[in-house]
Length: 275
Image 1 (tube, rainbow, N blue to C red):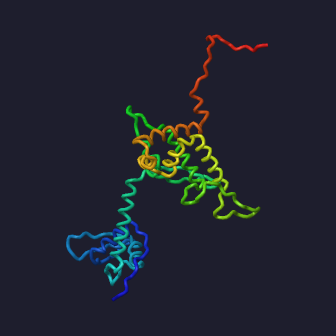
Image 2: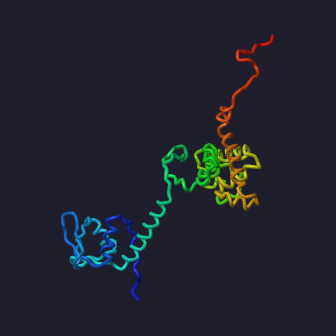
Image 3: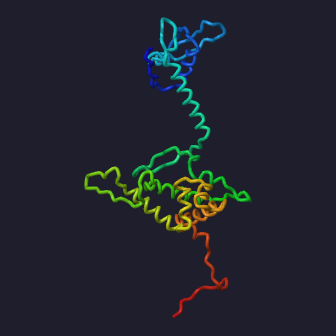
């Protein structure tokens, strides 16, 4: 039994994949035309196909195609390579159909860097689609932003139990000129834990649990209701109350801006100092 040849690790590109599919259908004769190579089939009814010479050389050098005199033949690894490449292509097409990408700026250490974020993976994306009976959003925008901010501090502080089993911060033991250990928390993580703790206190023990479950642990509303044995549709009501309280905690001046001061004096009333 002959030894099976491994599939070459060649990054696919449109020209290469089109060339390989053509050769996989049967041997072809080639001719040179400047920097291109033209493929001809012996059978009638097939038009000549033109490819960059670099694509043909890559196919031959990678072992996917064999060159014999003036003809190209499929090498044994070609079928497996095409199967994997086409499967990957279909998977990427499927994923692209279910992505909602947005360019954002993230903090990396002391610098800011652009990044691409898939909005459909956010735990609060589905909540933004919930509507009141009159068509208004069930969760106000500032409430959803507060939930995202809570989740960001949760992950920056490494509070996920998959990463650490305790929410108590570890002080990094650093000496001058030396770096802390890999398991030590950075100052940024310590600050994130402090902000997270204050946010949970602002929501209170009655509301913080549902907010952490949904925003941080990414549980669904139905899952929370089932785990806590709550009535149907009660989780979203408590979550809205929690996120509104959280939004007031993050932006206290904005919350007070909507309130007006009142007094019982006449329109021309002016206060006076008592001697």
